[in-house]
Image (tube, rainbow, N blue to C red; front, side, top):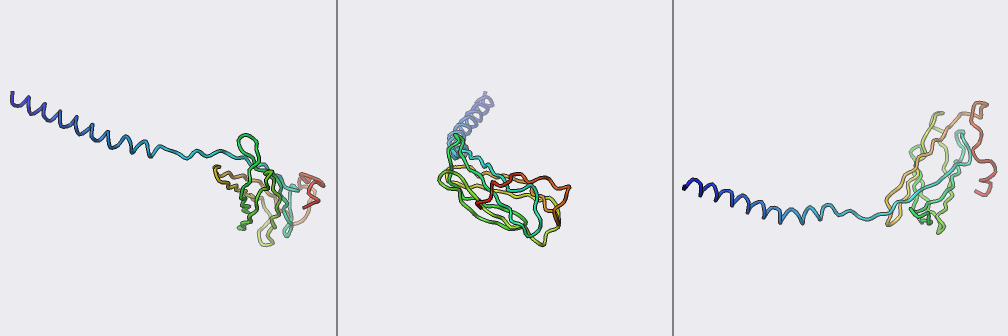
Length: 152
């Protein structure tokens, strides 16, 4: 009989300890699971040509919009061949910038990475393939956009 009481006493202590632990852990778990409510944004961008030669300038234009397609003013970082160039989108979400092509890097395909940062939005990245050729070639793809970038 004494053994049963000790056993019941241990069970009671375990239950009490579990309840105390639950009272401490549940609020802590709720605090950890809170995530900032950030909206998503979208980057749309295009380059002035399909390929470039060393010492060319890549002209890029585009827009940054929110989930509801409204314009977003964002800080944009353009990463290419070890360079970082910063620009900003206007109040209508549009941006235009130039990125130089290195003389040092060999002919190849590279990636131009555009990162958009705006308060209240999750960071967004866009990757654009850039082909660099030593000189124009008949095998090179045709320019993507003709005449549309004359104002840059």
